Length: 157
Image 1 (cartoon, rainbow, N blue to C red):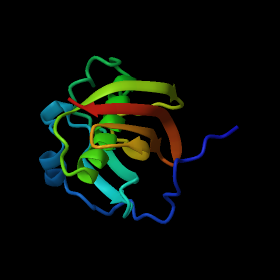
Image 2 (image 1 turned 30 degrees about the vertical axis):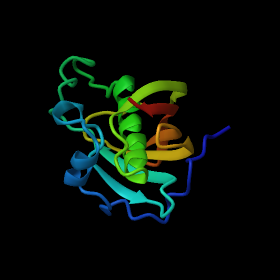
Image 3 (image 1 turned 180 degrees about the vertical axis):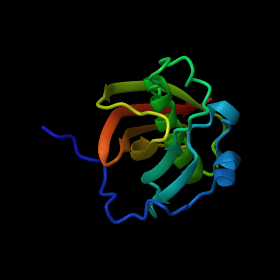
Image 4 (image 1 turned 45 degrees about the vertical axis):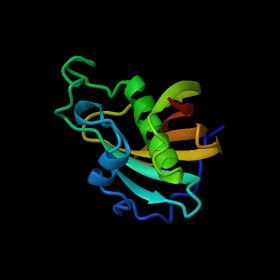
């Protein structure tokens, strides 16, 4: 059975920038090689769902070694991108609740490859949240195909 996106993104302008890279940098602490949320395309008014983007570049640190001659964006970094997207949503909703630690990922499936040059759309949808803890479902989409999905849990540390 085909997997469906967490929410309908067909009416969202994928070229939009709701939160710039600078906005992301002011909210999320990851920087340099470890920033995997480039900008936010869209957030819903209730701060329950978010659409972010990761531009998978040819000059990223993992390209020469994963896998030589056929670079594949590592699954663990896909999950990190989902966690950063989910954390951004949480931090905006609760006005920067402090440092958020990634505590769990569950029910993770990889359904396709992501390679340099791809634009990875990052969808996250809150399942539950408080100022201290959150749980989100997350997915990655490349060229209209879901390439991974996971359930992210994080908490204020």
